[in-house]
Image (cartoon, rainbow, N blue to C red; front, side, top):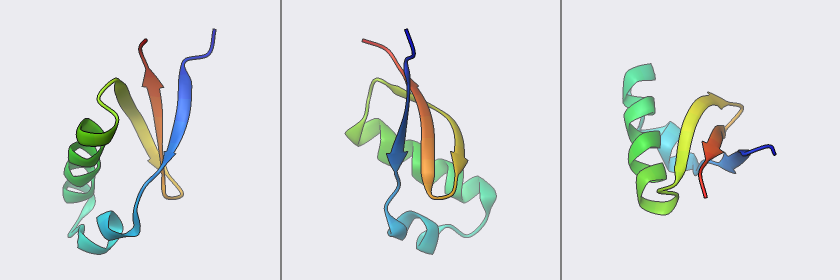
Length: 54
């Protein structure tokens, strides 16, 4: 069973991010609020590639 999915990240995250570390922090904050069971594995082309638990 494949527990991997992609989440489109909102543009404001990339607009507000000051550097790579800040981008990671903003993505994690966003994901924790909207997708609490998702674990971000990487960020690619405006998407958060995640694994999720049921």
